Length: 250
Image (cartoon, rainbow, N blue to C red):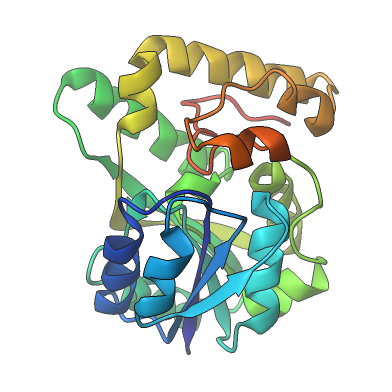
């Protein structure tokens, strides 16, 4: 089984080369980088790296769908640009999917790149949500059988919560798993906003979504990572700011 890695980016020049190399080191069959209009040289750096570069309308849903449309692998692995795969990542996926036909996809245990007990609690909460609520988020390395992804119509064209919506649909089609990984995750959003302030924001966000507030409405109030004017003009939240600890939106 071939695993195609899709990385949506917007002004991620500082880390894109490392993300691409770590994907290859993890055994990816192909790496597809989808740029949403970066103005910091991200696309140029990706173009010089060993990957397929695609340009698409900004927004994680549209960018990831564009990458998936080109992917040749039987499994699709969607990565945020500030997350990095462990060397055994794709092997874990292949073995899990080969062992159980009803398994449609899943995610990885996170390892946040910062010290402190608060980060370890975040990791624990995110693992609990993905494993027991079967609700992985995009920054946990969401992977899915390509056939299932296409049958579901890909990511919903919404400005926020596209990963949550896909996970909901996936678990109606079969079982989800949570692999040991680990998936290394940058701590930048927690360091910028504060760990518990960021977590509270995410609780409020997911609770509002659970109560029926639309992704379009939520995107108007969601705090954005500093990705430059392109992100602001596009009205898009950060690739890497959609993490909470325990709440299921269903």
